[in-house]
Length: 110
Length: 113
Picture 1 (spheres, each protein chain N blue to C red):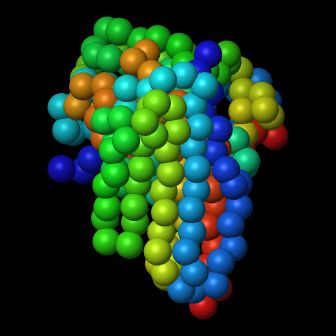
Picture 2: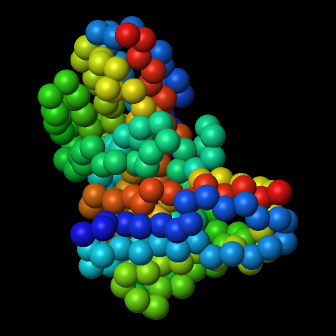
Picture 3: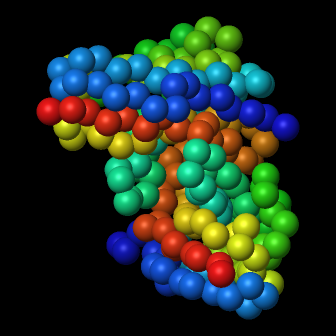
């Protein structure tokens, strides 16, 4: 079945440093979604990418979808303490099932 | 709108006991799903439903049953709890399917002794 690999598993940064997490799917995706989960909370939708090569920005966050629609990345510029949490990608291969990566846990040292 | 609600918030069970985790949404969403979250394992799909009366298995369905008699409710049943089912359970819903935003409930933390 479809697998979604996400790296790194953990990332610790100093406030102000950049952060990137990467996702790779074993199959071509119809779309990829990104979620953020704060400690003790539930996943919250950030964005969806649909088109090959798509790039979307939300303030300091930049999301990319690869040309082959099998990989994606989330980049945060100049991290802040409010960025702390676990970031998940989730891939849809057209099967009515969303497959989540294992997540990248981001901690930020003030 | 309350969004997606889950009860209970916390539960402790003994091995072999049964229980039902409740999930409800008031957004008229057709698609609902159950995930379990274990440390280092991300979110794994247990069961999902594309509409009332229709359910299907996800990645880790063993030991769990679901039903979808109404659009609003999607309960998850543990027939005979095992320690391996200790986890945090999240219910999610979306308007029509996985190609849209998934709205997650606050989760149920389950401990099986």
